[in-house]
Image 1 (cartoon, rainbow over the protein chains, first blue to last red):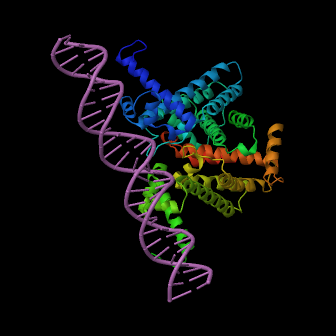
Image 2 (cartoon, each protein chain N blue to C red):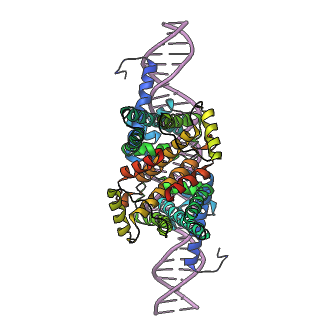
Length: 221
Length: 221
DNA sequence: CAGGTCAGTTATAGGCTCTAACTCAACGGT
DNA sequence: ACCGTTGAGTTAGAGCCTATAACTGACCTG
């Protein structure tokens, strides 16, 4: 052991990462069912139970994978928006949409992890998960909150709800109309991309990219 | 045994149904992970292996649950459209959207079964599954193909793809523009409803019904 | 250098899917 | 009316899985 330098803490961190890498590998190759604690241990030269020194349970490990995935997705979206910063507002939204889809197509196993509860009594409402998810949502909100043509006002009741949400989240300056755009964009992205990933468009020979652009453009007007 | 009349075939059919009912019960109460062949058997007074006389594998059982669920959903949508037959076209679309959401909220465990692969190497592309899924999609297409204001034409390439799809499916009379509306409606419904079911709107206090109406109106309006 | 900490081990409990081998009641042909 | 076949049920067991318990031995600290 101790091929690389570092004390116990560093070694432990390295092993944790190694386990997570193995988990992602197996997730990619065999789906969530293939991510078994025993198999992960074996894959990195440990026995099964040893893994429990690093993760309290399989749930904890998967939760961490989910949080990481949200982080990666958010970073990718942020980068795409940044790269398109010279383009028009609709152009930036289209760039974000394309990046969203590209990430999901590149890592469908991780995208699935985010949006379909992989566990028996899994709690998607747990603190860190909600936080991670909202961090990704923030990218959309920020982009849409940038100066641009005024968004159509939401119906009265929805407007109140969206305003309340923005206030509770500490972004009270965001207009309800903008928040509505963000929600619409998010749900449209997710709808199209998740259907595509699960193969529901496979038999249709559709250019989902074009469809996505259509839907994204329609959100920002 | 043999409380009710019937020969071996009828008895067998009854037991199959009983197993499926137990599976739905456990699915509702404990998620996909709780649908174990052993537990199902016990629940209806059999040993675990006996269940394999009726279903070749757990996969086969789940596949049948999925096909049934698609059927139920399609029937419900059809009924909603029928009940709203006196209303305007947008009114009928709104009714369908509401019915879609209502079904999903009433049976989230079954909705999840439809749209998130619950199994290791599950094949969502298998013949019966695709057929069942398209039967549900047909309800949307039929509704939108009914006489109404002309839908905006899709971009050239998308139009070609949608036309080809309609032709291959034997509904060549359906305009590409109509097919596009169906796909947009479908993906928007799924996006909103699946996010709602997974709790992603929970912290937002949103009236998803209103949001859904907005999105549906936007497709036909 | 003594003592504690902790990552690893083996053994084990209890669950799962699914197969094998067997039993025995009901059905159908003669 | 009998008797062979069918088939729905049984128990036993292989080979996975998650997770815990008890133990070992290397490292770090005082």
